[in-house]
Length: 73
Image 1 (cartoon, rainbow, N blue to C red):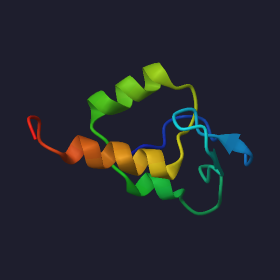
Image 2: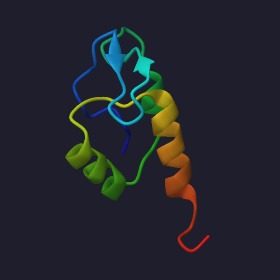
Image 3: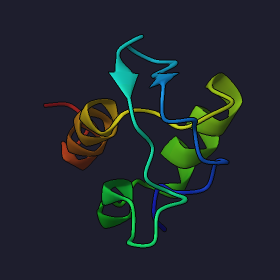
């Protein structure tokens, strides 16, 4: 399951997680960079509850990396 599930953010968007500016590429002719990330379904569900729009690529990478670390480490 990939990340791109929310509606594309406007070009002048701010990430709802970190507040940083970013440009969402979900509506571009080529795939957005976030489509190359895979997050566990439970994390995607949680993000959907917490945020109403796209997150920046840096936040998504951080979340993907944290999700890949086994529990208890």
